[in-house]
Image (tube, rainbow, N blue to C red; front, side):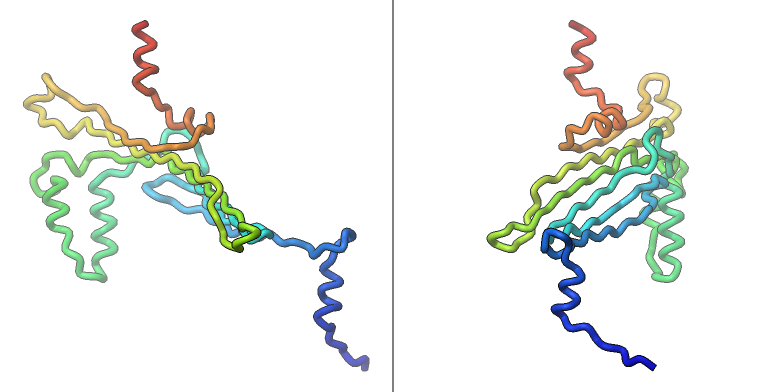
Length: 189
């Protein structure tokens, strides 16, 4: 039976060198698909061979995001809290489960969740530094049941949204369906 011979570190290093006599560089990716507020998102972390990294969070589908209601969120918290003895009675009271004012029927959707971070290893300081960060987040709320029926003939609110972003990527901006004041004003010029 042949005796197994262990390789020396120098021999392993030689195997890992390519034709240009440089060590082979390795990148690594860790990815996952997750769901937040019924919106499926892809998240990836890439460790670059130079010591830097990139992080990407982006929706798997662009378009109308599914809604979840405040009541569904309360029910989820109740489910989680059964083992933890968390009191959700104040939350239920605020959101209308006990007084039927419709706040529990507010629909919430995560319309956009985008994050891109690129970091590189600084050759002199050997510190990882973020070279760029882009983001876009948008949440929409369906508020058609919030105004009491007694005054809904005079005042009603269909929906509301909050968006924050710094990216200039056209497809992200387009997916958010943003209409800025200057866009509205162009209609009146």
